[in-house]
Length: 349
Image (tube, rainbow, N blue to C red):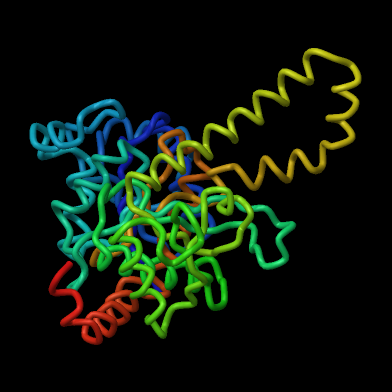
């Protein structure tokens, strides 16, 4: 079956070169894949020529794009023909099945919210992030998902419960985890911790028959892989994710420093080279493709701003897998069922 993915060719630090190379790589691996690129047609064609692409790729020419450091709200208002605006509109119009974009995160989220419909019954879409976890925990799969990580800074219990359903379905069907363990990020494991929003959320998640809720987890539990989906407000999730990225960068820089400074450290790192390579692969964002924005009528994959061709190709593959698994429709069904069971409860939140 053929699917169409629209890719913002102008978003990200390495656009359009790496974006176009990633598209070509994905199409080389999937002969049924159709791609629409939005962006500067002259630049895109130049990159397609360099990549020696033989694929038929539709290009929607745009004269504007949102820079990585621009204010999302201001940029989208002043640049209605920006490549990410056009990409999300194409999906909403039914001309494509999913969006992949590596540009300004705020602009991608806002363009999706402005131009695409939220699933009926859901108040807010959630930006999710896939992150590596330690495999020494026998129940850890080596990767987990956290949401929200920046789309909705403050959440109601209803929104957090919806995030749990979104994340559970995505992890089960895209990351192939049977009965994903759902946890609520909190300041303690007790169900009374965290104030009214988190205690109410805990109660609702406990009652949700279709979720494998394991309770509260603390920040120290995140890298150990004790849960497959961690639910949190966007403000906390974004800080947590950035902290994890910073620690990963620190470890890489420490290794480089040690290699340069001392012979015994060089020997030690050489002996550990296999493990270091595996660690690098686990923490490499290009392996995971990108972060899904869940809760919309169709899927948006937000790739890392520094994405290379490999990351873009993997993001496109993740989008195709989500289309095949009909993620949006199944999320809609589970949300509708839960909302109907708690219709009166949700009136006061």
